Image (cartoon, rainbow, N blue to C red; front, side):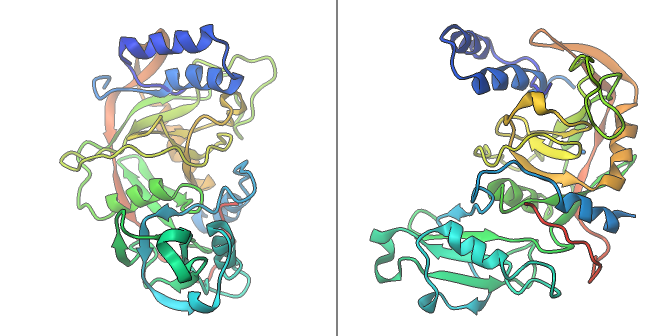
Length: 343
């Protein structure tokens, strides 16, 4: 399971209170599962063909949940639909209209950005306006304005072959398809990391293989325990000198092999080596490692470790943490038939 080491005493007490009042089972699962991942900094995640597999991932979302945007943000870009003549009742409908222009069946996306005015009082006559736009660079979207005074909600859509970033380590580079429509705040933070020349402090420090509990495809073996080991690698994406703002809870689908998710509100993250239905919907998933790169994650999971105990949970910590850097793709996917999508 995923957890931070050395959680403060009052956190354990809070968990006991939750148990004592017998709250919803999903909260109980979260309390147990989050116990496994959460570390503090003290206790020392052919590529192109695989995108089709990433595109088939079932994120377990309720209808419309993977059409999320960021409030109080207006993104700029060339308009492909003018909002003054294109109105909806919700941001979800606006997002879906943009997605309909980004099916991947007719070449590049005609729309990769949607901007919606959904505050009746603040928007006035502009309420319901849905502006569909096209960015010059989807990994560096053009911001017009942001802040509490901004009445717009904006979102990004990554089309076929887009929204793939590199997590570079000494053992190889993991290519990760990002899900901005499911986890827009998370993806915004990852895009900010791309602007850094270095990511000092970013590292992988925990590694646990699949053991005898999950097969090579990540399926749980009948009657086998659910760990330890817990079939994951874990690290932090907090760059030294760069203030980290907690990520709000976003889409929390079932964890699948390759899922990249936050531990709590970040900056600790993990990459799952297996399907973890037993963790329920406990973690914000903001991306997925391309299948061909999972062998790199598996290699990291086999590196020498030392045993540690995080809040009564036995974990395996790397003897030597692995520095990592988040980078843009070095190659363009062009017009290859990748058919990647987040839903």
